[in-house]
Image (cartoon, rainbow, N blue to C red):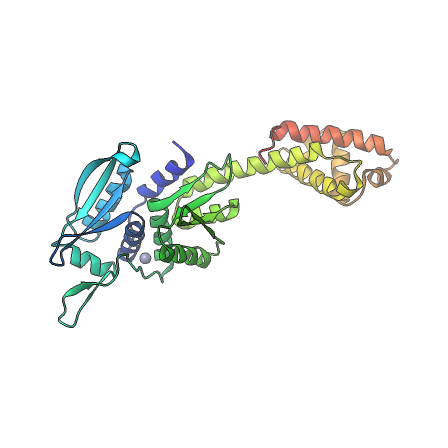
Length: 319
Ligand SMILES: [Zn+2]
């Protein structure tokens, strides 16, 4: 299972809470996976087409247990999807007007009969609970998340501008900065930094996936810091400050991870000096010691210290 399918499986297992949220999540799923069929004489049916059988069951339960509809479920082999089996849920003509009214796609005319006003739901997302439900539904219907071991990326293919705008707005209201770009004519909302993705997982309610992400993230940070520190060029004055900052970063990680007391005394001493004087050059660092240590002496110890960090946190820089 990929990180993406694990995250979706976790979200699909979440219990339903309030009625308002069921409708909001269903609206997002309808925007991303739903379609209307017109049967003449103003008769309309609503269908959802999804490959994930567990997601189909969730939509089924929303419709049946949550909103009191009697959807039908059948399977089709879709040739253009490489012959994969797809689940199709349908709310038939008799029940569709009530559903379309709930989804704010139909509105009563002057005689009180429901008339189709728009072909996509217009969810009202005012409560915080519904904001979470909306983003969860949009992600389940059209989202993907990359394995955080490789890169940080969460995307939702929005199918139309309205959905794109609404989803971006919901992210913004949660304090998550989302970006969007157009891929083959379709707006795609994307989150590309670890913190935004962590926040999005929190908002959607994917607690287990969030913990997995945080574990991977901390390992990557430690590995990255140790490698940058180990590879830095101490003789390049232009990069001196950056090198020193990287040393500080690696030392802090060593301190957090195993404690500086576990280091040999000579290395512990240089680690503590570096933490006390984060901006000093290696030569200056040597002068802070009593008795003073030559630049090459400091440099040698610093290299050993960085090697400790490298061994602790791995050698590959994941970038
Ligand atoms: Zn709600």
